[in-house]
Image 1 (cartoon, rainbow, N blue to C red):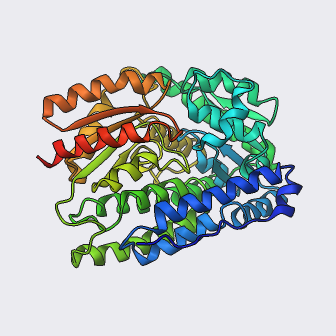
Image 2: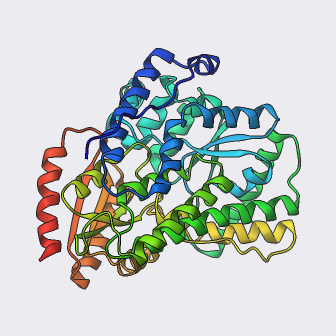
Length: 431
């Protein structure tokens, strides 16, 4: 199928008002449009309801930014985030917006490497470079950014980032004992106070209860999408599902949940009709590991170009973000904050030790998704995931699961090598 010409909309006047490097950013906008046309619109048999998500990408630097600026103009907080540990329910309870700022592009890394070491995580460098180079309207629009201490590269970068944009850091516990839960509950209380200070209003119990339902509904919609991907033939490509998971960190949550559910209605029809994006029996791969921030579509594109279909993402962009819900039946602000804390303590990030829950979760998702092999994806210099990969590999060997581990960055330099390794892996999956 020939790629359709795609436009990522521009608003130079608004960007200039945000003190962006407009000329440079406009080139990045055009490159995104070209990549999206090639990787996404060239796919065959896409569900019709993907049109909304295409439009979301088309307006990602224009209409969505205007929506955020309207929220900010109304005196409500706009918070940039880097991690699924952000208690976004608190921001939503204050009428605000949470937006993901993780970097998934190599274009901003040279800006970061003028300050930061080269031998750290490309996601951290990409994110910092977006702000340092003034080439991300989301970074320019936020009131403050939320940092966390899930890795050494991040927590030290936040000290440098704070020179460019107000950066609030939360201490993430590294174990899951009762004393660690107490630490996290205290951090949640402090974050609530920070959001209230920025917004100029106290968060009431009814505000938080409503926000918990909103974000739970977003997670329920993503859970529904995840379940439907288990069908064979797969009713949606892994690339499209990854795109939706990435957009979850940008879009307005009520609208997003509604659109995901509309898509799922269509996917249910496709499952009943056995209409798939790949032939029944195509190799089914689960991707586990580090997050794939927008527009990092590299691995999914290689897998599906080689004839596989990606049926699950065990990552912070994927299931780690939406697999757990918050108890909606707690009454009173303090009990709601405790329920929120309990839910976030279930996240099985590789920063935790021990982290047996993640090993079990990977195997459970493998079975639930109907996958036939696991590709573990690690970003270069991501020490926690690179080391934890040893335990994932051992678990897969014990279970007889076809397995491939790759470590890469955002550049295209290793695409040929990865393609060769992926094709050999898919032969193993198909045997």
